[in-house]
Length: 141
Image: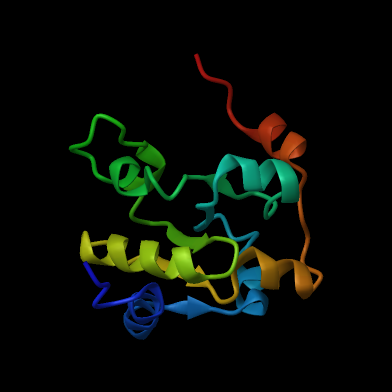
């Protein structure tokens, strides 16, 4: 069966509908307590490359389940309507699609980083190791 709409078209359509922030715009906001940066990459990417300091990890495959209060996988952090959620992935493609999906679910307080973590690193923005990320996470009870 031929693909009638490729990934590039899906990403372009998502980009036309979502709010995209530059690395500089995100850096200006990253210490704001009303902002939560969300790394949607796979844990193996975090282990290999690190992440944005202060980011939480919500793997792309679980994101919609973690956001929906009706889901058994719901994470309360996503229920805080006072927060602005800024998503990122490796290159900005997955995060564009994820941001659109969350917008389609009704979230209005969501955006993503143009160029993703790759652009973050290219611009010399701060990076936290996976070990530091894990040490900062709240311990499960």
